Image (cartoon, rainbow, N blue to C red; front, side):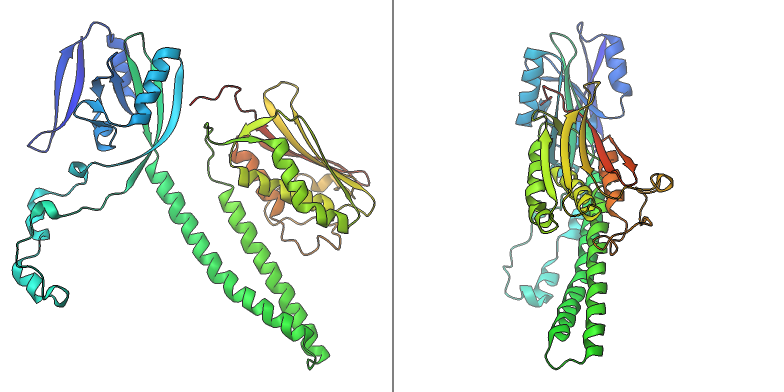
Length: 402
């Protein structure tokens, strides 16, 4: 059976390949690997590359028919000994020869002696000619999700999923949102401070104080909206389970309770946390924490003095999901409004003094955090008897793949 081995780029600039016989890598396996959309590598018992797609070279994982990434080699040794499969995230650099700098452009990229002498910045530069190999091409990192699995006792396959474009897009989007938000928040914060000074200035007339208070409230509303919009955007980024993002929900719930303890005490509302200490999920702890803060703030806002709010962590009856619930004894939600509470900018008809300035994004953030983590968000409520909001997440496997 022929096994194709990609050996890199030849002098012509095209990929060279050769074929060798192998009795152990059967034809069906080789055919299946050739049809996979992701880059693939097959190594033998000595970790020598016997088959590799061109992308593996371009992504900086293979060079000279050898895997050059130590973490990938460690993963290969692990699955060869234990079987099964393992996953890891890896950042690599594209090798210099694959950066796309055409040879016929090198000469034009090197400045001539006249050009260098004509530049003010290089007026006193050395007269030695610049060599082509002194050029440095820019390179962007590659972000890879790698799966390593054992084919049989002799061969291990490495699958490379290049997620670089998605990560770059997310980074660009986040940078844009952050920059725009800063441009909004800075003048808003300054205007809020000015209105506060006018509101409490001794020489201010009642009309000025009233207007200053109104401006301050509008500034606070805008700041709140921008912060929630940033949370909402963040909550829609995909979450992939890995060994680096395990979260103990009870520990997280206790942190949220401590963060909001003073607010609960000020309203004379008892805030309790309890549940299963072993419930663990995979995800973004900041996102889940932000969603839980929203739920607890809502519960406090709709609860009366002397009541209680409870945060409960448990497993579902089927043993496959984690439940993170917030229970209150508040005013409850009318039945005909319960389907709409998770919609963006929706505001219920029964607002309290503590909630009437909200903008209606809190529960939308909760919903998207749950969905992004491959879960769901639910509500149970009865007017006059309180509400229970739940976030449901898949439980993290007991033995995470590395």
